[in-house]
Image (cartoon, helix red, strand yellow):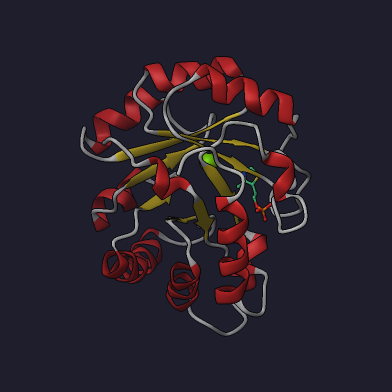
Length: 214
Ligand code: TZP
Ligand code: MG
């Protein structure tokens, strides 16, 4: 599936750590209203049935606003709810294998940390890359950091859309200017905030300032 670069501008990944008594789908609706352009459901501890139920709820919201929606790591869940696609890490499954399972018309996003990984993912049919961590983050404690020079090397080596991920917030987002990325991907800079709508609105404006396309 060919992805519009513009849909990568502000990519939000869910995290139920920050639920604060709300539902995840309400939080997703708030972030979309604030300007998020892409949603990933990331769940590490749900049973298959609960994962599917959660994904269905969120898909109702993303469908309403016509926003791309992918599932982290779980192709079975992606197929069960007919999401727009899946996001896989380097340790999860090869892009080739994922493509066989999910079909030609779905989005496959891949996490990459090196030029080699990025080029291979593109060759094997990935639709976009998530690259990082570009800054230290407590959200994923085992994430290795890459430099902004490495980020730029990766973005210059591929032609599919690319989002930077890891520790990005309102204070440091400007540092990503000039790295040739298509957008940013965040968890805590949106979902840890008391007002998700306002936090997203501010990040959306800032993200428009760091990309090179109109
Ligand atoms: N992969 C690399 S860093 C990261 C993931 C899932 C966590 C991003 O979360 P945050 O809160 O935006 O740093
Ligand atoms: Mg993974």
